[in-house]
Structures are given as C-alpha cells and as structure tokens.
Amino acid sequence: MTSISPNSDDVLLIVDVQNDFCPGGSLAVPRGDEIVQPVNRLAARFTHVVLTQDWHPRGHLSFASSHPGKGAYDTLAAPYGEQVLWPDHCVQNTAGAAFHKDLAIPRAELVLRKGFRREIDSYSAFYENDHRTPTGMAGYLRERGIQRVFLAGLAYDFCVRYSAEDACRAGFAAVLVEDCCRAIDVGGSVAATRDSLTKLGVTRVTSETIG
Image (cartoon, rainbow, N blue to C red; front, top):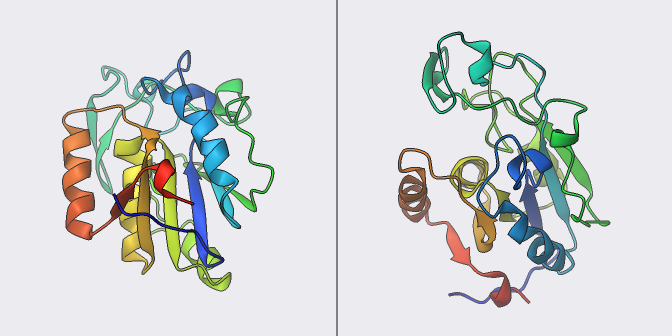
C-alpha cells in the first residue's frame, strides 16, 4: 500500500466511535472496539482531527421501533430513498451515544453531530441521506484550507463509506485507513463499499503506512 505523510492541509475524520457501535451496544459493529487504540495513535500524527457523533432523537425515522410491523435491518421506502431500519441507537444524551471511554483525542478541533433531524438519517459526515442537505462539514474544511481527508471509524460499510464518497464529491482527496475501521456487513454492504470506493479512486492504506 501507498506510504503517506500527513501535512497541514490534511484532516483525520474519525467517524462515530461511540458505545452503541461497540460490543455491548445496541447496534454493535463486530470487534468495533478494536479500533480505539489504533485510532488514538493515528490521531497523534495529524495536525487537524475532526470527530463525528451519531445523535438521534427518540422515535427517529431510521429506528425499526418507529414502524410497527417492521424489524431491525428491514428496509423502508423513505421520501429520500431506501432506508435500512436499525435498532434504536445513539439516542441523544444516552450512554450509548457517548464516545467510547478509551477514545482519547485531546487535539480534536470539531465534533460534528449528525442524524439529529427526526425525519431523515445521516450516514455521511457531509450530507444527510437525501444527498442534498449539507451538514456544514465541507464548508468548515474548505475555510480551514483542508484538501485531503483521511477516514477511520465505524462502520466501514455505512457511515465511513458515505463520508468517503461525499468527501470525493465535495472535491477533497479521500484516504481510507482500513485497519482503523470495522464493518457491519448488511446485505453485501462490504463488497458494495469496496466497489464504490475503487470506482471513486479512494486511496486505501493502513495506519502503519502513515508517518
């Protein structure tokens, strides 16, 4: 894999390393907690670090519990397209929505909360799931002179994937740090992610190659 040295116009985007996405959480990504220490070490190599935090109100559209007769991992035809229905997770001001207790990123410059609009989900750090409503991330990065976005976090095949795709579409170079991600794999989502990122030209590296 390619060796890369971060510089002052790079940012490390750490996606949703929260309790509900780690073992014991309501939407646990298998072995999700394994990335915490590698992410901490990786973050120390970057001048700029940004975190995202899933932050849903109770009764969110994406929760299976909001739709009688539906179960977790069923799909719903939402106004903005197909929506996977999830167990209730990352509900605002709950322990599940908190960052993993061992995540230690003292130099993080921004925590961007997403998914807080009840009627629309938000996988990407850049856009809601309608692909039109911006989170403000792209403008924030542009105004700070960022040109390249490194990505790590949970889950590889949903929030990390869509953040990488939208980083590219917003005009940033995207670099995925594969060993600092874990996947949930719903309906072939891992294979679909790899195919999409390859087509977009997203660079894939391991944390060992970042110096």
